Every structure is written in C-alpha cells, then in structure tokens.
Length: 289
Image (cartoon, rainbow, N blue to C red; front, side):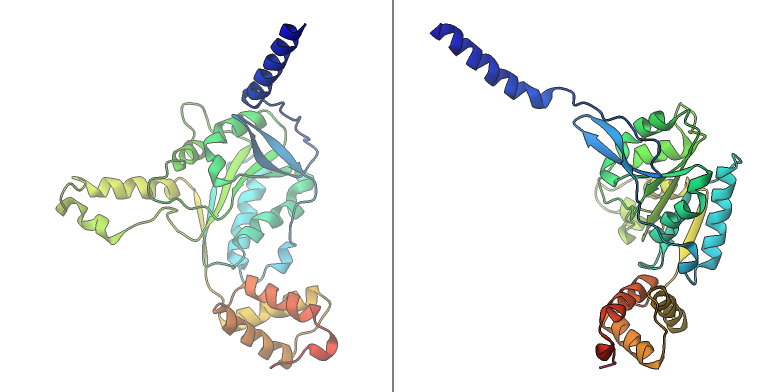
C-alpha cells in the first residue's frame, strides 16, 4: 500500500506540472456584444466580449470635422458592403484620433458594426482573428490604438498581410483602423540617408526606407490630426463644460488657458481634463488663480 501511495503522489505531482502545458479551454464568443478584445490563452486566443465599451458621441468631438466626415463616409461604405479602405489616423496627441474610432460604435452598432481591439503584442494573431470572424454577418473594425514599431520589431509583417492579404484573400467583413503619432509607424533616422557610406552599412539604404514606408502605404485612407489653436481649444473646453451641464465664461476660459500652459499642450484631451477638474470643483472653488 505504501508503494501505491507513493506512486499516486508522484503521478499527482507530475500531472500538476503538466497542467500548465495542456491546451486551455477557449471560451465561446458572445457575438451579441458590440465590441471585443483579443485575449491570449497559452498558444491560443479568443474574443473577449465588451458589453459596455467606452464611447463618445460624435458631436462631442470638435474641430476635426473634415477627418470625421471622411471616416464616417468610409465606414458607411463598409457597412453597406461597398468597397472601403483601411484607415490610418496620425498626428498630434490628444486631438481625438482614438475617440473618433470609438465613437463609430454609437453611430453604427445597430447596423451591425463591431470593433475588435488588438494589442500590438498580439498582432501575430491577426490571421487567427480573421479566421474567427470569417463568414459572420457583422462588419468588424480591427482597432489598433497608439500603434508604432521600434527598431528590430517584426510584428508589423503580420499587419501588412492583414491589410493587403497574403496568399489568402483579405477578409471582406473586416477593416483595420489604426491610430499613431507616427506617420510611417516606424522610426526613421537621418543616418539612413548615408548608411551606404558607413562601414558595413546597407548597400541599398533606399530599400530599407521603402520597407518602412510600405506599411503605412497599405492603409488606403490617411487622416491627419493637428494641434489645436487657442480658439479651437477654448471651443472644446466650452463643449465639454456643456457636457457636464456648465456654461463657459471668462473665468473658466482664463482657468482653461492656465491649465493648458501647465500641461504644455492645447488639445481636445487637455480640454476634457480641464472640464473634469472644473466640473468637479465646488462652486466657490471655481476661480482663476
């Protein structure tokens, strides 16, 4: 009996060590959710449902009317089953790039639009995501937020295949919308222009540059976002104060300008952060220092 007990203990210990290596159970996808997040389980992955995604009303995003109109038109084409482009939104931080993509759900969710958020670390799984949604009646936007690649990273190659399709055709019910502060998504150095002159440098440095630019070129629609001037910033402040049920006045404008000077930036994000602070103050504390 002692030998049997010892054997069972060793077998139990072995199973405990092997358990993490066994394939994990993949949860079923709740297709009723308006948004999803791609999650990894071991070597596999699944779509985690997000039933209450963070979203803003399109009307609350100000001074990006041109970008808004073009993104809406492209998305309407996609929802209607007509040809549409993958979109790259680039430019100044805090100007509404991510918020604009998230706001699409409020406009198009009832028409079958779904958004899948994918972290940069999970880009090699894009082929699996495409296979997961293939054949579904919904229309999916694969959302890559704040996307950029550093020297030596090669996960961008999976994104290139998803944008143009590899040997398999590009999914008809999926587009990629990405935001970035970098126009070409990858770092570009002045030294690349003279790399061929350096010891052991590239013989054809232009081809290296072409490789980097080719990723952003695969987005059919580029939307550029620019820093707010003072008038645009104050208009955004007034809009967000109205969102909190407050009116903008001279005192709040002076306080908002001081706030932007402390942040070293004027943008829709800074305007929202000021409005949150101003609305959260007690009445007697709403003053300009």
